[in-house]
Length: 228
Image: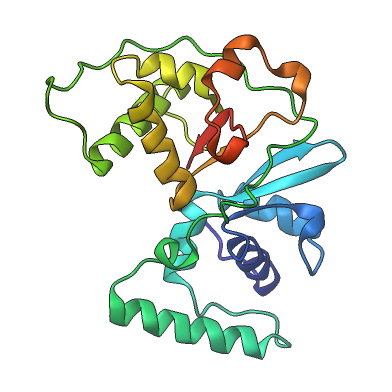
């Protein structure tokens, strides 16, 4: 894989400043088509069509590259950003934190929307359910997060950064009660750098099953889970 140019590195840092995902049109400076396509070809970002524009997401490879290249060359007029990234690099080395720890998840009050004009994700047949944990031993936070991710990967066939309906996820976790699954979703919404919840932008795409399966903290419903 060829190294990103200074301008392409800047695109990655713009996205990471948005917790790894943003509509292309909201990024400043503007993202040029050759840079977007080069980053996508290198596997550093994923590109989703959203009407006439695009939604860009940093991939696992992109996060890995950024964590190891905090002092990679940037356009020469961005000295202040280079200085700050150098300080961040030294801080992470001294504390043992990861870049994902530092960046964190999107703010709970303003979750990233799903692409507005993209069709609702296709339903996938749930894979055979994993054996339920022994009764009387409630799952800890890490165990619950692992169960949710395992069910997610079963539903996507092992793929990441794909939309999974909460109705399908709840069916795949049918051995867990709703309150338990909701507590896992709450933890994802609260602080999880590798997962997020989003909504259907088109109310007509919502079936009664989607309404019933929605996770609705403070009255705001979420219907889709993404894990990268």
